[in-house]
Length: 414
Image 1 (cartoon, one colour):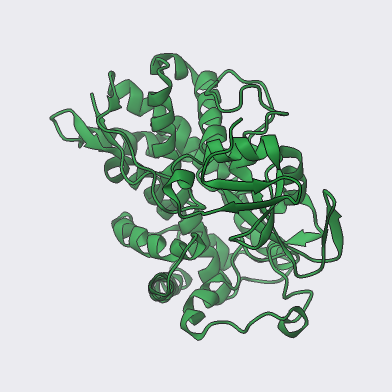
Image 2 (tube, helix red, strand yellow):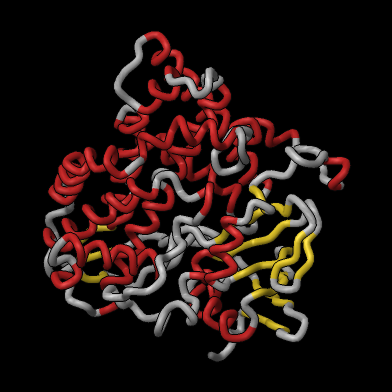
């Protein structure tokens, strides 16, 4: 495998230079990942100043390794770690993140996840199938009659945010505002964020939190059959969630419950159309649909990187880490490991190989995975069956949102 020009690599020292804001990278990250597998699957990313792993076994193991965690200040102080104090202009964002399921470790993580998890198990999520089907059909009914559509705004944006909002207990009409808050909020996780991005994220966090607190007050006064009421009224070992915990949990569920799925609907449609495979064969029945969805998740995952703190002194693949060091794992690259997948860059829905790592692994495995999979397994077949002859109206452009992976827009015709 030739090394793409955007990647400068020294396998002897395991050093790599790679600009995450370069369209040559984020526009086709799989080519870079393939080169890393061939030449240097463990490397020090110079621009990010972090040791990074792309091998399937190492990524899978690190995600489950309790010597690493999503937080560090529960085992060491800022002074001990030489860590700067929080930025004052991000106080609202930091407050919203303080109890995020994505950012905490046991025992707090265990308590919060236990209270939320039962709503996301497959048997509960399956009950939403008729609603997802009805919504998908209604949206397609509303497509422009001239045989063209921009799929992200007319379809992909709407289904995930509507369904996660309904599950939590947020009115459908709040969908557009939730999208605005979420888009501003998640800029904090993207490469090359600016002070303007940070200010916008902090404003969004405050407005988002204020809104969630108003809904919490309503549910305390009049509980309903929704997830927010459940989180308010259910105790775990004699403890209830505080309002701050409820705010953090609701925000992370709303953000994570739609942001990645929006990208994945677009990514999946593009991969299928680019493959040249007849869509009818990909969605012939539930089993083939599931295999198709899993292969698109493997080949074009919506979230590429997760990081962990070393909680103690540890060595991985000959690299020593001290407590307070960070490591990065590229889940999307692990999905392309040639030791696990034959012809890993090819779209092959009939694979019987390793499960993809697109939803992570271990205690931080994506809690919304059953809902995301259900949405994809329902929305994609309906889309292709309702619109036979679906094709790309123009070549899609990948959005500059790395380490997420999605499209700017997806113009289709039929």
